[in-house]
Image (cartoon, helix red, strand yellow):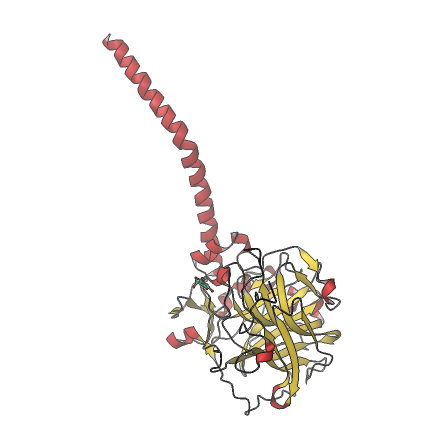
Length: 417
Ligand SMILES: *[C@@H]1O[C@H](CO)[C@@H](O)[C@H](O)[C@H]1NC(C)=O
């Protein structure tokens, strides 16, 4: 009797243990290995892109700016940059620059983190990638890249021959095409447009383009953007972007992949611009110049009057090793139509061009760089916008502002349902 009881008890215990193992084990082990694989990936990614800093600065917006030794920057992870001799300055600068006219009443601005310190000579300021930045990305592999979407020809809007837009992306831009371009410059008004959905963005930039939009587009882009998914907030940030295969596998924002070589120790790509313009209030703008060094195939970027940020080595590209075939300036937003209607994400100041200075956003002193490395006024500048009742652009030409345009809009409104 006692024996049977004991056997019964033993059998029941064994059964329970088996049942428990059966219930718990697959979840426990299965999930745990998956979690740790993702954790490991995140860890590896952060280790790869966050180089050991010589000094770190905590910005009021929550960013950490790492001062990384210039020869230890992400660019040098690129296989083709292993034995690269860093260029500490461009060989040539475009000539004939129309100097910033003193009569233009705008304010020069910079970046928020600079209130808290600076990076020593020989280092570059890098916005540290946080765990939360990587986790927000749809996949670790896609972090810092543009989300791939099916390309669509917007033929019905009499787009320029080569302009094919990404589905759901809307533009209000000025552009030139049909010549060989060696650079572009503009002074861009800076705002903080509202974003309806975290996966949408609003940006204002210039594009240096060559190749075909469908497959092998080479693009260099620089300007300001508000992108909650990329940065985790609604701040207006200075950014760059490049691709050499139409946004497929090459390229990324800022220094989030290897490619762009930074030489400047004062400006951090991806950092918050401060201050920004307010409606009917103070206006702030930034100068951006991107040009190709005639002696090399490198494309350089300058911010403001005297901050040469760095360069994209020519070998990153195919067509752009020679010249660009199209330049665009203006705004772009993502319209995800999450509630079945047009997004309320704003472009520029969120106001239409007709409202003018202090209310609508502008690009002024638009110039291109020609084959002799001279600044030129763009000829045959055209406007393109998919839905002018949502976002629009108006060209102008006068005195100190040279060639300019106002652009932007509120997105959804009674005329843009
Ligand atoms: C960004 O702005 C939207 C509204 O435009 C708001 O709902 C959201 O909470 C903001 N996000 C952050 C991170 O502040």
